[in-house]
Length: 284
Image 1 (cartoon, one colour):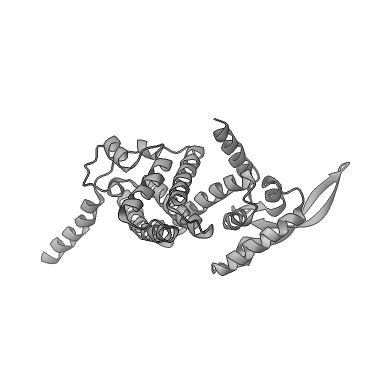
Image 2 (tube, one colour):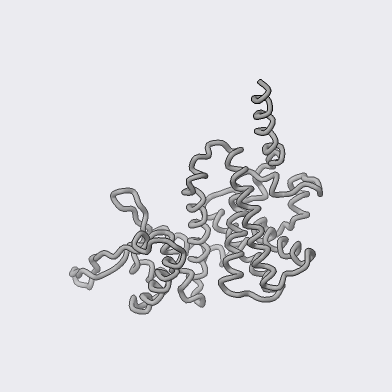
């Protein structure tokens, strides 16, 4: 219960300091974010911003698009105020900042989850291909393909951490599922959703559930690589913790827990349907 309250309060803080300009673009100010992340003095926060800007540059993103300098008025007491330098930060900039902030601070760890999951969600929503998708079927096919791709990346990261043989990888995957599905492993999810042993869980997920699992996979891969985690047990624990944090974020956003989402028709059937129509069209 204490952990949930802490998460609720911290995520509320990040939303409370979120601002929107006159063009409808969201942003956070560097000075407000520094206070939210527990930095008493802004000068101690500036090196974090510099590391985040370097990471932004290395990722191929224009730094000026995400870190915009401006002057803001700050109260200095007795009703007086003075103008000081600050920055307007995009959600992506905030994500990079919390990844480079002091990991010993609990609020930083919570900020990493908050911005990581929501940044990835925004990335998917802003993908040109995804924006053009209008039906649930199209979204499922797109996300399932993304899931297959990122599962390969996750498997590679897990292998580097020491998860080598198929049995170890199955255990590793179960830890991710247990974190995201409130303690349910792959076998339990099958039973809960009435799936056969031969059926792939991912093939029977709707777009919302696929997106949640995509967040789990991408964030686990990044954490394994970023922190250079070694050892099967540490890798398993990392996957579990990331899954659990994604679950908490879904809860904070008012979403439905993944185990309560409806079972979808096998995506393999959807993949076959367009092909049949094309064949009929050619015959005509």
